[in-house]
Structures are given as C-alpha cells and as structure tokens.
Image (cartoon, rainbow, N blue to C red; front, side):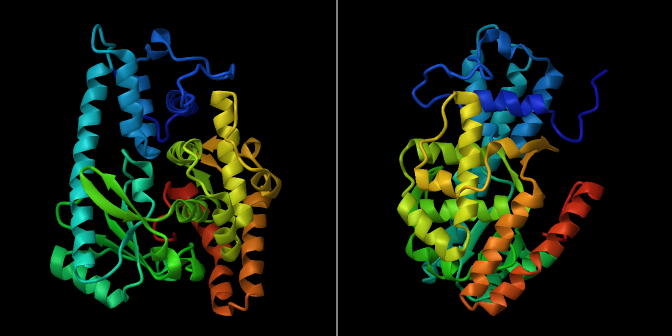
Length: 371
C-alpha cells in the first residue's frame, strides 16, 4: 500500500534538491563534505521518496530546474522507477507555465497598448520555473485596472485579505487560468509603506525574454528589494527558489551593490537586504563549500546569517524574535524619521498582522485572509 503523503515534505527533500541545484556554476565538484557529488547511487530513491521531492519542488518553485537536472543525471537508458513519473510531471509543469505566460503576455500587452506601464515582479525571477500566482506592478488607478481586467479578460476580483487592503493590491481570477493575477498598485511592502521605491520602479525596469515573449521586469536591485520585503518582512521564510535565483544573479555579476544599497537605504531596509544576502551566501556555502562573493559592506551590515534559519513545514524559516523584529523596528524608525507618518501608521500594523497570520498558519496551514 502506498503511504499517505505527509503534510509537508521532509528535510531530506530540501537537502537533495539543494545538492542538485547549487552545484558550482563551473561544474567543479563541491568542496563541502555536506554535499558530495551526486552519482547513480544517490538517485536510487523509492517512488514515495520521489513524491516527497516533487512536492517540495512544487512548494519551492523549482520543478522545471529540479526535474530537468534530475532527468539529465539519470539518463534514459535503464532509467529508475521514478523516471517516467518525473518526465510526466515536467511536461505537465511546462504546459501550465506556457498557458500562464500566454495570458500574462496578453495582460501586459493590453495595458501597454493603452499607454499604461505594467511591470512583472517576482514571477519571472524563477525562470524557467514560475510561481503559483502572477505578480504585476503598476501606478495606474485601481478603478481603471479593475475596469480593464473585467472588460478585456472577464476577470473577477478575489476576496481581499487585510494585508491586501493595506498593501494596495488586488487578485484577479481569470477564466481558464489556474493562477490568480496579483496586481500591486502604487505601493510595495506588506502594509504598502514603500511609496518612494514604488513610484520610481518603472523608471528602472528592463526587458527579458521568457517562453518566446518579451516582458518588462523589475531591475536587479528592485528585484532583490522586493524579495527582501517578501521574505524578511512578510512571510519570514525563504524558498529554495529564492536561494537559487539570488545565487544565479550573484554568480553572473549582475548585482550593482552600490545602487542596491542606495535604493535599500532610501526604503529603510538596507539591513534587511544585507541579511537576506548573507543568509543566501551561507546556505550556498553549505552545498558548494564557498560562499557568494559579497562585498564587505554587505557582510558588515547583515544582522545575522544562515546559522539562524531552520527548516520547518516546507520552508527555511527566519526567526521572528528577535531577528525579524529587529529588522522591522529599523524600517519603522527610518520611515518615521522621514516624516512619513501615514506610511509609519501602516507599518505599525505589521506586528498585529504577523501575529494573527502565524497563528492562523499554525492552526490551519494557511495565512490566507490575513496576508
């Protein structure tokens, strides 16, 4: 009898996919003894173990990258028991992504045709993987966004959580699309406290190709700031995709640390950004033997690193007390010091939302309706 799947994948799934996806970019065997090179013996896991790995890959948005690497290592000749399952899961995920990209492109084109700027945030950071929703940002008025989405795509607005109202974001459900389209309007941050960064975000965008389409996406610096806001100030957890994504752009030398610090300072979250990068670097070192090549300014500013995070319920968790609480206090102090009393009032609600969300997640497994 096949065992019932656990509520959350075990730690072994995280460790295996980390070994799989965090090999050195140049293909050199990892130095770390914690992550020996993968060989045929390491790929001999049972169908149940593969089910755990696949569940973790879905939860952490690394299905395409993980399964493509896994299938390449296994080879088609004398493939293991899970080979066909992996191939089928990969084809299914690619089909889902292709459908989502087509709709995403249509939405972006509809706004652009009317002279409106619409930027894809977060969703394409994981490419060739794609998240479970499609995130966009615009400074177009909310009533116009809703009108266009209803008229052109027959979209309806999903029920909004407390956090949605504060963050000034709307989720749209489109017929035939499994992923909601989440549009952030004029604000960033869990409570919508980040106005200055949001107001200039579209001046720093770049264009990327994905699935045969061209998309306007956030700059590398804005991408890291948004990731930090989401991981260190909102969810207090880090997905494996975040680590792989950040390591990839760092390895490629795409991060302008001077620009990143300038923008993060203006948002009052430089300590959070530096801490996020330090956590990623420490985690990468566990599997490669060497950390990311971060400048001294980042390492000196980081409040803590990878030693403080832990695995729980499918994610790498960032401790709330005192670690995340300290970052929150710094952001609030910076917002208030600029005289942004309204944004400070929004931000002051974060501990209440966070407390309720954590309680809801522990009771029900979801923080929906709160965040």
